[in-house]
Length: 88
Image (cartoon, rainbow, N blue to C red):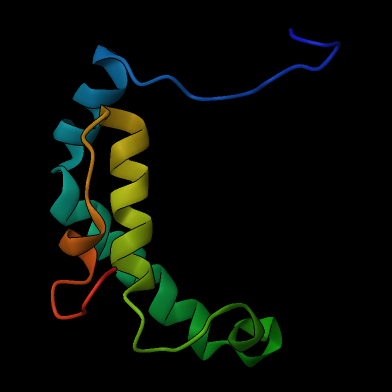
């Protein structure tokens, strides 16, 4: 606890890394997030369009890579997510 505040953060370890590998790694996380995003975007009651810039944005892939990164410590660059875009 610093400055009277509790900071919550996941620290990856061997157990979380093993869990990701046990379920099938990044490909399974990407399939799971793609299915979830596709399902939620079909639900008009959620009105998710106000939270995303475009349906063409690789949100599911980017979110799956973030989950993978948090659980394994493997870093992904933006070029891995946006290979066809010019990034400054």
